[in-house]
Image (cartoon, rainbow, N blue to C red; front, side):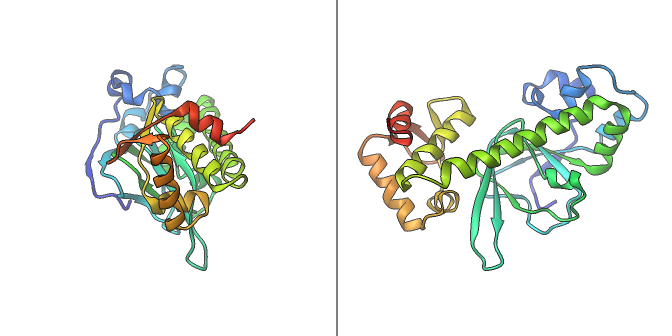
Length: 241
């Protein structure tokens, strides 16, 4: 685990149902069906580490041993793929309720991306032996995992569809709309210019120019770690009639 945040163990059945940030957890959703065997469950849950990470902190790196899944309770995580030539591309943005590191379930011995916090992230590291215990305890857990796997595939398709066609400004508008959708507010997390470039496949200079133009046109406001966006205007720009 590449994180160095404050690690605690909070994953108990009582905590899962009391903490609103656990509402979308794959484990909680399974336990709510009350079909899992209780034998050994509590000791398995106690192997799950919870940690809070500041922006730019890494959860795991590409090619590191894939020995756990990461369940996001809060914040945004970017998945970055580095090519043999050193080019880095953001291939997915994960939100609260998503799972990172799903390739470990398919038998991959190494992670295929680098997972890094974009803003303040709260997540739980679920070791693979815990996953195996949950799967053995009840079929419902495997169903939940398949749903999360499909969600990740849908997100990957969304990235290809939204950011591989159209002008650079259309792609930027779609990126901002995706961030708004993930936060369910008029605002969104503010990506760095290098992250925007890595998501859209443009240079950092082009990303800076586009953001300055959007700001001049009143499409975005604010700064720091969050932006206020004119979602209606961004939708018109992203998908012109």
